[in-house]
Length: 240
Image (cartoon, rainbow, N blue to C red; front, side, top):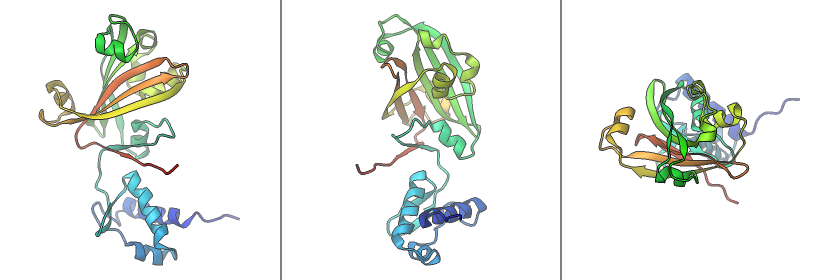
């Protein structure tokens, strides 16, 4: 005997189907909590839970005193510290077309900053990777990353044209990732980065610095990803 999903999931399915079919348009106010509670014969708390999770996904926007609205399409990401999910996985799950444009992948001597990030001696060889990430043909992010020479020299350029860096490390090279450390900051844009991303020179950028370590503690990669100012990052804090 099949059991029906919980009511909050039924409400989410109702809202998602309404948005996908166009019954609820971008920016439109959704039925209120009392209306949905009556429709599904449940409590407002159940409806609030459904809306809360949809808001975390970025599908709806909750406005205090006004109600819940269909979110206008935004470029963004969400963080979940319980899994090694990439932004690319979230993009693909949303049905968008994702592409990479490889700008640079070459060996070079490490300067003081890069050698410090990778725990290497200055002057040691590292691989410098730059990729432009495009969604639906529009520049979304510029990846600037550095890898130890022993890893970089094993990577094929064609992998970098189709795969996330996590997939390259884990699937193509067979390396196991233990931790990914992210630090998010705002930064002024350089003329070169503004040109690549197609953003105004004076517009600040969102920068995600990241360091990836293997299970033996070895540094596998360190670098920055630059996003336009309209990029958003959502994250959820859960009680212990």
